[in-house]
Image 1 (tube, rainbow, N blue to C red):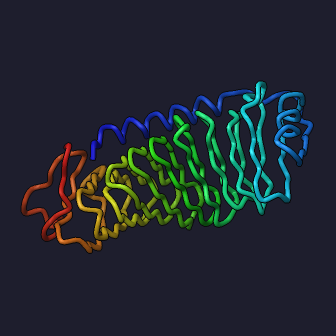
Image 2 (cartoon, helix red, strand yellow; image 1 turned 30 degrees about the horizontal axis):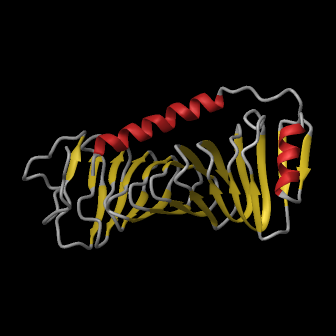
Image 3 (cartoon, rainbow, N blue to C red; image 1 turned 90 degrees about the horizontal axis):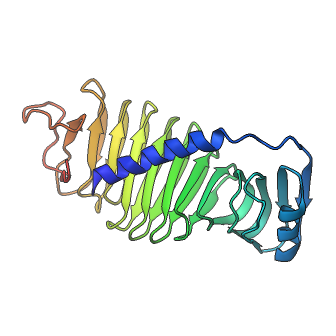
Amino acid sequence: MRRRNIVKVLVMMLVLVMVIGSIPASAKKKKVTVSGSKKKIEKAIGKSKSAYITISSAKDKVTIPATEGSENKKLVIDCPNADVTNYATFQKVTVKAAKSYTEAAPTNTVVVKNEDAVIKVAKTAQLAIIEVKAESATIIAKKGSIAAVIVDKKGADVKIEASKKATVGVAIQKKATVEVSGSRKAEIGIVNQAEDSTVIANTEVAIQTEQDINIVANEGSEGTVLDKANDAIEANIENNTNDVVIQTINGEYPPVDNPNATSGAIGVEGL
């Protein structure tokens, strides 16, 4: 686990959030709702002067093509029965309802409001920002994709699956449970900012916490690192591996007689 790479992704995420948040919305508040073929969707996005486009469809598959003029528009997905794939760049995408949503544009901010949402990040996504505002969601990062996940719903249950060479940075902003799984060749980093959140690790992950945290380290998570912002932070660790879990404080190893050290380890590499 190259921890510095994870930190870099998290910084990129925060910078991009601030940049996107500073983009002014169009003065035109008229909302346009469209359903139908890929061609009709493209026409509605490209020709409409509205700042708000809603795609509502009863179909089982919906494709949103890359469209000139989409960048300053906001998109709402309301397709409860559909697998939706988006190739266009918007100011913001809100997933209100979908069977699944695949982000295939290079960069988008996706707000997830759909309960039990399945959000897929395609390899074409250079940096997808996924903001979870639902009680449950599954984020699937495909091979080579980069995703920044913001957990912003108290009590949320978020599952993250990362394929080989995927990079995923997670910011837990409200108390939640985040479970990570996938390839050990993925780069996964979590920054916890909410007291008493829980991280379930089924694969290697770098965790930084600013608040008390619960960690379940399952088989396959060997190599995981927990770095605490200060030594007053409590970490409740359930270690189901054959190694020991070692905590660091601001990147430094605690003394060998530190009462927080467990018996035998999750290895620490790259610190």
